[in-house]
Length: 359
Image 1 (spheres, rainbow, N blue to C red):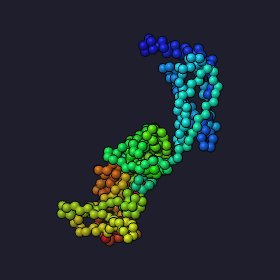
Image 2: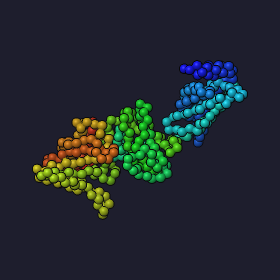
Image 3: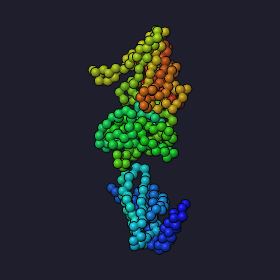
Image 4: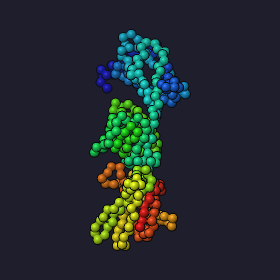
């Protein structure tokens, strides 16, 4: 440290010591602005700055929302040298904190800080609406008054859309920003960030000015398999295709169609064709790209029993961010099964069952 810096620091510390008799206590209390009830266990960070020297201390409010904070003090014109800043945090709350609070002279005062409970958001898989999420999967958050406008994202996917950002903080304390697909007043679709630790995480919805407006919890697991369905309900017919290969040619076929009279999707019978044909079922979903293909099983069954289908591919879909894909061969032993249930299990975790019809 240079000599003039040492001299300055020595002067400032001696100034503090010389005025120690002017110290006092700020009796801080945090209350809910609507009910007046105390808010306990709020983490309070106080940064006290005297000219260029800052000291930071942290403490929690007690069961009555109180904390007694000791301050050194300066009198007279020296008061202009002091700056005090408080930062408060507790999951699910936002706080109205004075920008600066400079204790001049002897102090024994009260400082009341108002807290507002944030309305919650619930985050689930976009495919089957289950609560477990995994890295890089497509997820949805639901709540009220989440945004003032409705916007769909352009490519490349942004981290700010309709004036909103979504921050995920994992169990290891890492905070990452999600890429956004869609924002509306009641729903936000997004891509979970990569590299998040397993366990309970938090999500915070932030406006364009950095204000936190929503808060929620997220449960992160290595895999969270979910299959997209034709009607986006997480049940019934899958968002899927059949790839039929014969004599070097490939034909793509749907597994469902919309019936305008019934106003619903109905299955298209899958013809397994001649034994020389290769018929592959392609399922689209999210939440299994972290798994090894050896951990993926697909069973197709009816009341008469099931068949485990050989896996061709399991992993990320190559063109759409967050989307995963499973390809399985449909053996001839499935012919004549009629209405069947497709059950996908990834690393021992079962995805939502979907239905098909086989000729």
